[in-house]
Image 1 (spheres, rainbow, N blue to C red):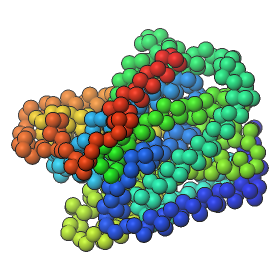
Image 2: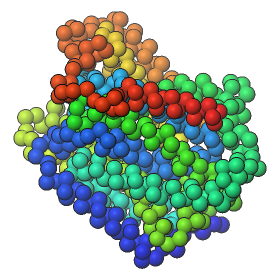
Image 3: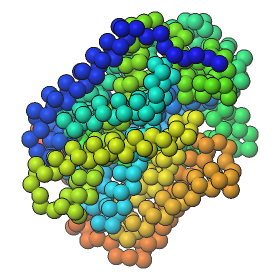
Image 4: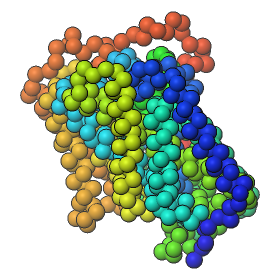
Length: 549
C-alpha cells in the first residue's frame, strides 16, 4: 500500500491560507462595482480580451484537467493529447470566428437565451433546465475531486473538504458575481501552472528526460502503443490504448463532443460574453486556445511519469487509482513550501471548475427561468439578490452531486458521459438553427428531446451491460455521435413539416444576418486579428499532432 499523506508543515498551510485570503479579497473588491444585474451576471460586458481569454481557459482547468488528464495520461499515454489538439482547439477556433458574432451581436445574456430569440419558450426552458442540472453535476465533480485530494494528502474527511471548498467558492461568487469568478480564474491559471510545472520538470529529470520516459513507457503495460496519438486506431485493428477508432475520435470526440462543449457550454461562453466588444469576445476563446496547445506537456506527461515511477498505479491496491497520479507525484518529489504551492494549485483548479459552473448556474436560473417565467418585472436589485441566493443553492446541491462523482475511478470519463447527454444534442440544434433559416421552433424542441433521450439511453444501456463498447470513453464518443445524428434528423424532418419564423425576425441570429458591433471604433492591431490568431493555433495543433502521431 502506498501512503500518499503529505508531510506538510506550517509554511505549506500558510501558503494555502494566504490563497484563500486573496480569493476572498477579490470577492470583496469586486462587490464594490456591482451596480446592476448586468454587472453581476456578465461583468457589465466591460473586460479586455486577455482577461476573458485567460479566464476562459482557467474555467476549464478543473478536476477534468488536472486529475482527469493526468489519469488519462497514465491509463492511455500520448493518445490523451487528442482531447486537446483534436478535441478542443478546432472547436475553440470555431466558437471565436463563427459563433461569437451571433452570441455577442444578439446581446444575449446566456446560451439558452439565444434559443429563446431564435426559436421559442419551449426550447428555451428545456435547455435552461438541462443546463442547470448539468452544471450542478459538473460542479459536484470538482468538489469531490478536491475533497478526495485533501483526504489523501492531508487526512481531512471527505465531507470536510467538500464543505470548505464549497463555502469559499460560494463566498466570493456571492459577493462579486462573475467579475469575482473571472479575476480569480486569471489568478488560478498561474497558480495551477506553478503547481504542475515543478512536478513535470522534476519527474522528467528523474526518469532521464523525454527519451528516458519513452523507454520506461515502452517497458510498462502501455508499451510502444502508449507513445502515439493516432497510430493504431484503424477500425477492426485498434491497438491504441485509448480503445477507440479514428472514426470515433474524429467524429465523436473531435466534432460532436468538442464542438458541443466549447460552443454551447455557457460556463465557457459566459466569459466571452463579458468582453468589452465583439472583437474582444471573438478573441477570448482564441487566446484561451494558445495555452491549450501546450497544456498537455504539464497535464498528460505527469500522468505518464506516475505510471512508470509509482509501482502499482492503476491496480486494485488502496489509493492506487489513476485519479491519484498527481497527488502521488507530489508526495514523491516535492519538499515543504513547494508542497504548499502544489496543494494550492490543486485547490485553485478545483475551485475554478466549481466557480465556472456555479456562476453559469446562477445566471441561467435567474435570467432564463426566474426573470422571464416566475418573477417578471421585478426591480434590478431583486434579481441580483436572487442570483446570490441561487449561488448558495447551487453550491449546496453540488455537495450532494459530488457523491455521484465518487462512483467513477476516472473523472474524465464521467465528464465525457455528461457532455454526450447534455451538450451533443444541443450542438446539433444550434448549428442547424444558425445556418438554416428554415429550421422551426417545433423542430428545436423535438430535436433536443430526441437527441438527449438517445444519448441517455445508450449510456444507461452500456452501464447495465445491454450494449457493448470498447471503453467508457468509446461509449461517450458514440453516444455523442448518435445524439447529434438523431437530433439533426428529427430537426430536419420536423422543420419540413412545420412553419418557420419570418426571416425579418431572425436578424442577428442566423448566418449572413449577424449584427455589426458598433462599439468597435477601429480595427484591432494586425496581431489581434481573430482570423490570424485562429488559423495560427489550428496550424500549431496540426503540427503537434503529426509530431506525436
